Length: 96
Image (cartoon, rainbow, N blue to C red; front, side, top):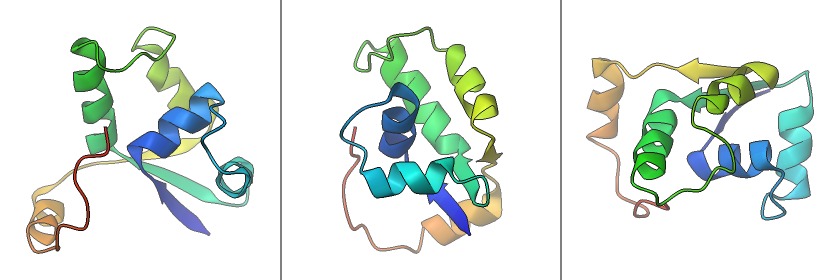
């Protein structure tokens, strides 16, 4: 299966946070699954980290190590993606 993880899920997974459900952890760790993370999440993490609103317990450059070590594929943001985004209903506000 293919799974797109959101920013919180990625942070909780890579930091071993208990807030991540056991089900989510198992799905991400299953090497049969393809795990994806949007570049927007990395951008969000960088902004929150630089503002001091996010404590990663590591330097920001280690986020790349987390992506590679966990075989997570980064999804780029292209104009077509923003076109789709511009038409989606707002189900929730920024979670961070």
